Amino acid sequence: MIIKSKKLFGLEIVTSLVFLVFMFPFMILIMNSAKDAFSISQYPMALPENWGMIFSNIKTIWNSPNIRYPSSFMYSVSITVISLLAITFFSSQAAWVLVRNDNKTSKFIFLMFVAAMVIPFQIVMFPLLSWYRTIYMVTGIKLLRTQWGLILAYLGFGVSLSIFMFHGFIKSIPYELEEAATIDGCKKHEVFYKIISPLLKPIHATVLILNGIWIWNDYLLPLLILGKGNKVQTLPLAVATFAGAYVKQWDLILTAILMAIIPIIVFFLFAQRYIIKGMVAGSIK
Amino acid sequence: MKKERENALIFWLFLTPVLFAFLMVIIIPFFMGIFYSFTNWSSSARLDNALKFVGLENFINSLKDPTFLYSFLVTTLYTVINVIVTNAVALVLAMVVTSKLKFRNIYRAGFFIPNLIGGLVLGYIWQFIFNNAIPSIGETFGFLSALANPDNLILSKVSSAIGAIVTASVWQYAGYIMMIYIAALEGVPKSLFEAATIDGANEFQKFKNITIPMVAQAFTITMFLTLVQSFKQFDVNVSLTAGGPSAMFMDKPLFGTEFLALNIYNTAFVKNVLAEGQARAVLFFVVLVIVSVIQVNINKKKEVEM
Image 1 (cartoon, rainbow over the protein chains, first blue to last red):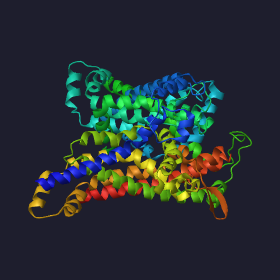
Image 2: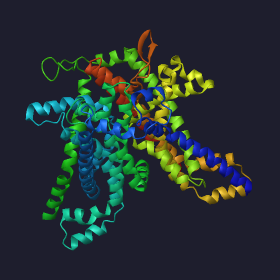
Image 3: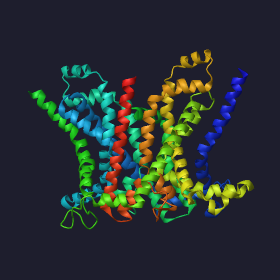
Image 4: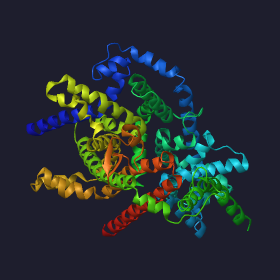
């Protein structure tokens, strides 16, 4: 017994060291967000002399006209939220009619969505830009350099996996439930909104989290659709533009990064259990 | 009759939004993309008279271009290393945090957190670590002074720069893969281990004969996830090395860590040959389809065996 607990203690020590290694980038980030340009370049590993510096750095980034943190943050939030609402709402109702109509058309449509999951973004990205431009020239609807074009793209790229996951979940809901509701006088669409939708909560969480983390952190799609130097920009885009323009100004770059990741870390701390469960469920499906 | 019509109406009404988005963003651009890869498509030659059919020229030029061949090789190398390291680290972490450690829940969350940070942002953090923090460690400790030598900067040599990208990717992704292994490990009945202990099996035998077979199903998932995600790597590549440092390949100087996704992007926007970039994207797609088909077949075989 003593040998066993000694072994466990040794493992505890080793694991906590590995844990520290994993936290090392965060420590570096926080420490150096509280320094000026000189002490960052001279002593990147030292503790900051004055932790209060972190607030003045944050204030600089907050007010910087080059990064426009408040507006980038708001655009990131609104783009993520609207895309998520659209993805979950539209894919859940689509998955439902695909499950409950057992015919060739719905099988074909479902298969098409599943097959599309193999398509890498790279093969559609250049034509997508050209297609958006064509739409603008023909109809005058502006999709390039606007958040609406970006949200439509997220809907298009997000629905495949989401429909697939809702499909699997809805299949496990007994059909008798819907029949009973229909006999009681429920209209077809009411069956979905009143009976099925409330049952989908667990899978909604999974779909929201998987898509949410992807959309919040995505860089390439906003880069292509919004472009650099646009009034509309997301946080990753703002950080990249800023880091590109202020090469080696690590005091500002690191603070900007810190401010870009704080929202998602805070979100994680509140919803930790759902996030981990959701992401694992998502991968296994 | 009326009910059937209502049914059909709801069917199409509910499908229209997703089909519309899917058509606009994936189907149409996908076929446009395949079409454009056979033309001289460029920012000046769009869908007008200037657009010409050029056959396989873009594909042939791509396959003759050392930068494309090199980026294919270096991406494959990175993918192999990254898949192995990520899965090994993730499996070890999963085994550790499912043991009886006191702070296992804190470790679990800590190993997972990097996964929430986007590749672009974390690439900059690691760039700072490799370019500033590590040389500074070398300055402080005499016996590590080699680290402070500017010639030894990790990002200044191709081999160590690839190692740096692997480090950042593993840091980002191992915690996620760990969670999948945890789910698999927690499904292993404890009685199996107890029985093995009574029969006198040592730790390694238990690992080899119980743990590995029991998490085999998870392996196919994690392998596929890490494989595809490594092969598509773009964000960390851009922010950590931006393709640098330079290297020589087939007597041509080129970017030493330019992975495929970055090579496609640069071909279209830096080299300014849009059609050729599109042809490379088509080749990229074909490789991914082959990998996926192999993966599905392996999965099916396994299911039959089970």
